[in-house]
Image 1: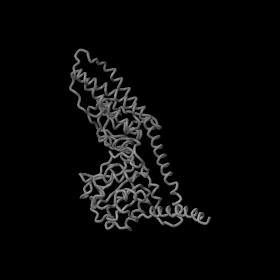
Image 2: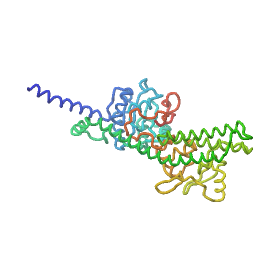
Image 3: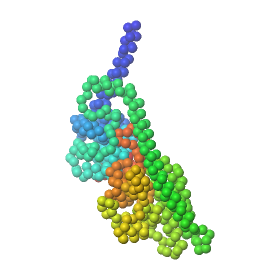
Image 4: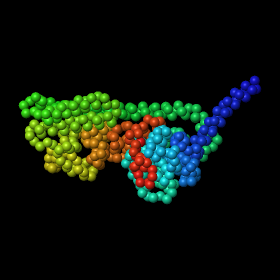
Amino acid sequence: MKTATRRVLIGPVLLLLAALLTMVTVAAPGAHAAGGLDEAAAALRKGPVYVDPRASGQFSASQADALTKKIKDSGKPVFVAVLPRTSDYPPATLLRDLRTKVGIAGVYAVELGDGFNAGADPRVMPRTAVQNLVGAVNRSSYPTVSARVNSFVDTAVTEAHGHAPASWGGAAGGFGTGTAIGLGALIVVGGGGAYAIARRNRRQRAEEERAALEDLRIVVDEDITAFGEELDRLDFDPGESGADDAMRADYAHALDAYEDAKSAMAAAERPGDVQAVTKELEEGRFALATLAARRTGQPLPERRLPCFFDPRHGPSVVDAAWAPPGGAERTVPVCAADQSRLQDGREPLARTVRTAQGDRPYWDAGPAYAPWAGGYFGGGLLPGLLVGTTLGHLMAAGPAYGADFGGYQGAEGGDVTGADFDPGDFGGGFGGDGGFGDGGFGGGDF
């Protein structure tokens, strides 16, 4: 009986000791693993800083501890790895692979040998912010690794969106036996809790996406209907007298764009999918403008962006100076009617949409209209056209409104995603080595 009793008592004790050892490892910010990408990822899931033992001469344990405390105290999902340039860390894919293996949305900065680079999930930090920050750090020619990574972190923690991962265990500080016992008990439920939080966050994002898509659907359906009415008013018969192959091709192109736009909208599942719809409508309207010119013997129209004030006006004819209320003047593409109104000192005929505050021009209606506008005007030009407007401000300031105009796509900083992120948005550095070399490279998005 005594032996059986001892076995009964020893089992829980061993489990508690194992839990304590696990939590000591988690809470020791300066801890080093044996080296390699898997070890680096495992360490970064437990804390914000990892130093490969072979790089400890570049970044000491005390420096790692101080940086860990700084990041944890900020509460932001910023990860830093100091690694040697070895075959364990292929530079061309290092940032992407590290993000995949860690499985947490955030900002990732890596010192590899004598090269520095960084990447981020779009909702945590926009591509341009990462590129500018990495460039500024590298151009500053800091003499030590500590100076370089601390400079990056000091700015990154003020600009990054999201929260520190739950697996880091809160702010850095003292670690006593009582804390170890409490944290050890949490291990039992920690895995299930993290999964529940991740599932809740995914469900919340899905609900946000559905709501944003429904707001967009009203506007896009109006655009599709308006284009269909333009086709009806055209009254073109491919077999009519005077019709030639070029006219028939323009008409077919317009019809295809109309059908493709309807199909794309019917299949849309996320706000970003709307961009393909409005791109088709822009293509179709240019085909109609070309057909109209052929039928009347006029010069064929120049391929231009649609009218900025309302893409339903068709292709623009000129660029004109315009400023939103309280904003700086910029040049925007306008149709002939709006050009005339601007010259007369009148307000252009702006595309308005419904908001909780009443009807507003689309550029002052909020982030849901970024993918709608992106299809008409293209990702590269749109931010410049929208500078000083509500939508332009949101796109510039928040990673949720990035270059793909995907609305609510992407994970919040600190969310556990595993390998479920879009590597197509990633662009780390320049050249075949992925940017780790002479320090002359930029950063990118995951």
